[in-house]
Length: 224
Picture 1 (spheres, rainbow, N blue to C red):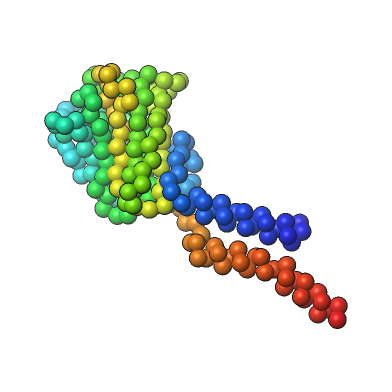
Picture 2: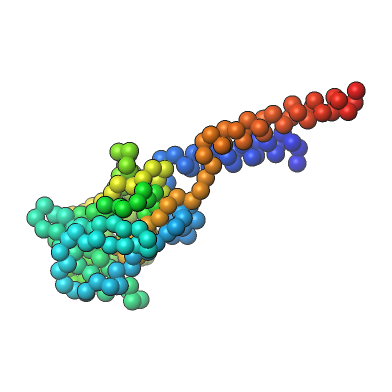
């Protein structure tokens, strides 16, 4: 590979890493989210009492990461844990129009993901719902994503990795005229995987750009 081609390839890789570092990245598969995250902890809700009202907000842990979860509809703050598929536990609300809100993160987290669904009064997954998830970061920026659950699966994964600390994640049912409620399974919290700092990346790119000149200078010395 020619030196110029190698330098261009390396510089492109570094710039791509910097672009990925800025703003909020959204992931629709758990594997891609986990690859972009670090120090992940999971809250599976297996310790919660099933099929009874749980007064919110609940103070929870996902591994080493503390957080708070509420079910807000303007009147009450009650959550319900119901048995899900394959031994899982689904945590959500049972009031129409309620929003699940995750906030109160005890450390400057930058990654949040999980499996999301809509459930009925009986605790069953509703196959034709659409969820709206809005992530807000510590700098006031936000990212809103629609999760369509009308396909083959009534449960969908969504993950966010932010370049700044997380402030909150709001989850609601988009077609709120339906008597179904936002729920989640296996919440993951963590940090962003390490990427080059802007200053270090700038020095690296500058050094790469100097290589051709240094090589030409060395060749002239040898030739002379």
